[in-house]
Amino acid sequence: MSEPQTGSQPVHSPAFKKRRFQNWFPLGLTYAAFYMGRYNLNVASTEIMSRFDLTKAQFGIIATAGFWTYAISVIVNGPLTDRIGGRRAILTAALGTAAINGLVGFLFMNGWTTKVLVGMSLLYGVNQYFQSFGAVSVVKTNAPWFHVKERGVFGGIFGMMISSGYFLAMTVGGWILAYLPWYAVFLVPSAIIATMYLVDKALIVNSPQEAGFSNFNTGDATSHLADKDKPVDFAYLAKHVFSNKVILVLIAAEFCTGFVRQGLLLWFVPFLKEVHHIHHGTALFSFATIGITVGGILGGLLCGFLSDKVFQSRRPPVAFIFYIGQIISLLILAWVSTPIAASFMIGMTCLWIFGVHGMLSGTASMDFGGTKAAATVTGLLDGVQYVAAGLTGFLLGGFLDKFGWGVWTFMIVPFSLIGSLLMLTLWNSTPSNTKISLRSPVPAKREPALV
Image 1 (cartoon, rainbow, N blue to C red):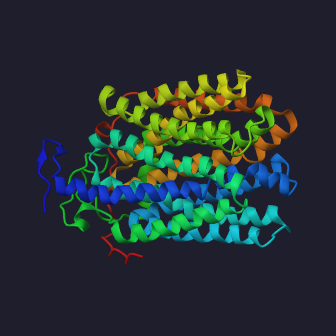
Image 2: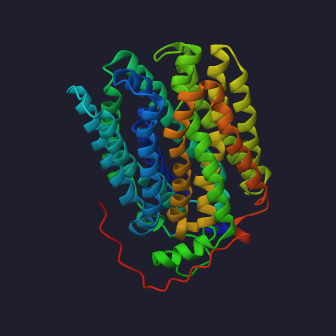
Image 3: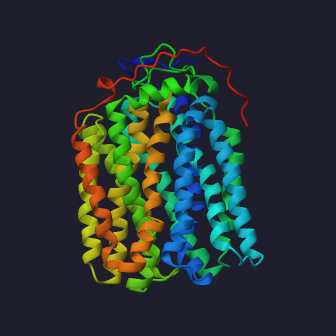
């Protein structure tokens, strides 16, 4: 079944749109569930520190172990996903994430108390290894289904689904901690992710062609290549990706985003508890965590709309605006003194953080990596982001132990500033004037059997 095209952008049939929905919607739900199995550590931070007498720096070691495992893994798993396909990658991620969260919950349920710092660092690291397949599989699977002119608004819509993962992790996780045994914050996500594995196995395919439709020219950075659907040699691919100025600047910007994003998300729960006396299960805690979800949704939609409708599918101008928004919101968060204002500013800050994060690691990676290299570029951007995120664990945690909450947001702001300056250097960059030249020196390889 073919897809008619008008100019450079295809006109999709109702049947195509329906099948595309059946592909990306469960994929989005699965990735949202992954957040519940990742940020449950953040929600349980005060519980873990108090139960096992850990300092902020010690708890930060657990987070850093996970962040840096993710950073290394996603850089490796990006090229791997480009070769094995998004479907196989998301299924691997779902199985592993469900298993590790279930194991952690089971151990705590049975009274685990010895060497928790070492054990949790190892287990959270393994969890993050499997989680690292998530983002790259999402981008890899969606890239062949969406033309570049559709991706900005779609990125906003998809960001809404991902932001629902923060609701599951932060708000629902807070309710779990308030009303169920605390270790259920690991068991419940395990069951949800295992369910999504079964759904994904039944519905997700790698490309329109596998669903009975014709593949089409997506208009991205590798869509002009005759062999865009064939795998390429890893070394050759890395050489040409790393020679692309736009991708290098995006990598540097995502380092900044990683520090800002996790610098807020990892520590806002103890901040609200220790500074503003806001606890799990309270109305103000729910207000703050729901604000993260709403902020993420609004940020994603606003980014997508501005990019496609105001800046002609240019991503850097919108990212610049959102980096400036981060700076202003972080400074206000440091200044406010009332619990309700602090709760509100958590969500407002996340609007600017998640907007630029989705724009760079999701939409821009598809645009400038292209269908051929989408997962590889996403892996690089996500990996570098988590290198920076690792510094928010033991390092930022150590500073908080020593200097208190007064330095928290002021240590984050410089990274937003650097990100904004980097976007100025890419102001007019688009996939049409930033092509990746990839001529594969190896023949196409047979697609591995899917999980």
